[in-house]
Image 1 (cartoon, helix red, strand yellow):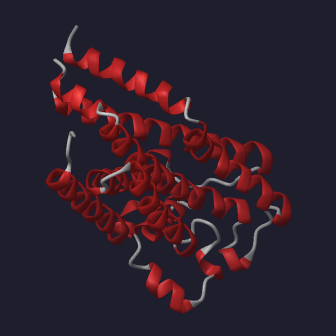
Image 2: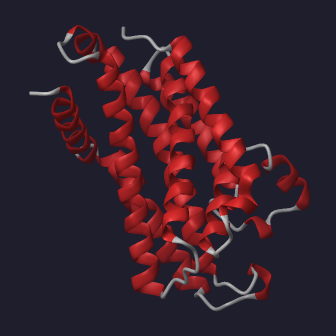
Length: 250
């Protein structure tokens, strides 16, 4: 069996294990659609001048994609890495015939895949239940989603690499994720936040994910979001460098 086939088999196995974890599966696939259904039922999806002529659901779906990205990247990834280290699973993978790099790549592919599936579930809920409006280029949106996801996966691997235990990884991940979601426009539109809060949120990676996804969703070209894309690329690189420096197999 080739390394590629072994890697793909490992990815499928990791996806199955992820889906068997009820908390991780809930926050990846169910939490964002539930919030969308709740607030969509309350506020509807009528176009509003306050939201640039778009409805609440129209702006919430791309913002909630950021919430899914942050949840997987900053909570699921660090907990998964730290748990496997504590259980000595990483040590076994390092000693296995499969190159260690293949295991790490398979982990990233798995987390990207479940994040994408969670995003698809959210989009389907918005479209089927509320007639969500989409004016963007699907390939541009997918590219922006990929950049954002990889940036947060880099951060998550860095947190998981530095956290001594799974409990610490969970605490640090939540401390990073939930304030970002509250201040970065993932829970409520950025337009509703005070100007002082928006100035602070401009330094948060998730804010740039939300702005990027909302812009691409509404039909903006990627060229109008070079600043957001650059910020996320730098974030991912810094996360990767920290992970490379502090990652431990045992």
